[in-house]
Image (cartoon, rainbow, N blue to C red):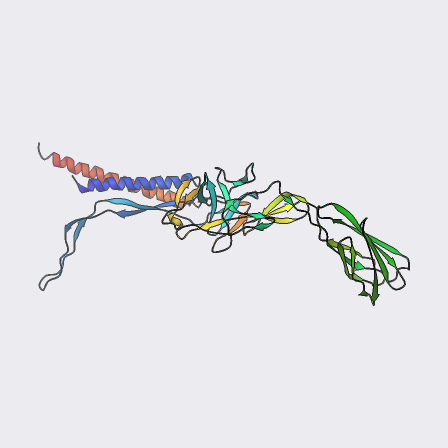
Length: 389
């Protein structure tokens, strides 16, 4: 039989594979995080008809004569270039700007993806559309336990920021030196005990001949002190202790005609519940609590590989590590060569339709040309069989 017949068959098979890959790329043009593939061809083993000969004293050398036996698909490479960003406005939609993969748990198996569309499930875990659970490090008392084993990233919907007792407060502003002796100014602020129970701390400033007396009470404990000023600057009396709260008065001044003395702040708070959360570029999930507290509740992990092209597609826009991809190296976004995270956006497919339609034409014409090889070879065989008539 003619070798060209089998060469044509191998060409049909290879270009059919190219059509399959190109069609899959076009079908996934709107798939989040999809990476296109490209077919790589190579020729098969060539049959040696005549070997090479070396040059002699009177004759020159000759080259080998070989007849190729067709084409085969050497590989299908995955293109991991960055896809375009699409803004969604959803805080749980995430996009990796740069290298790296999200780490997800699918049925107990670790897989990797560039698809950052996640939503909380009934347990507060961030999961993908197919149920893949996002992996990272959770926080304990606002401290992320990075460096340990990866776990399910969970938004603690019923988390409580603990109460903190007030131990210090700050008074700033000006006490008017022109006030009459006996004039009083009352300032109060809400403070908290260790259980978060509030109480009012009240300071009463009374003008004296030498300055101002200050008396504090929180309903059960009391404290007193005296403030004197020289040219408006506090010279004596800078602190006042009332029921375990040390009030700092060093920022108070004593200039004429200005009454601005007031509490600036205090360091206690009541217990608070989680109201919302934000995602930082470094993958840290920060919870915003009803008491104004901001605490880290977790951090998303990313993975990188020495050879991303060696990853195996596992469906659902996920990949599996292989012996040729190398082991996954985990880290936080923005460190160790990993990209940063962008919340509220998704990475779209990197399929270039103009290139894919061009590949479609090339594959179609290549298929037709190889089919012509088969029909031509058939005609030659028909002529050969017609010799005996």
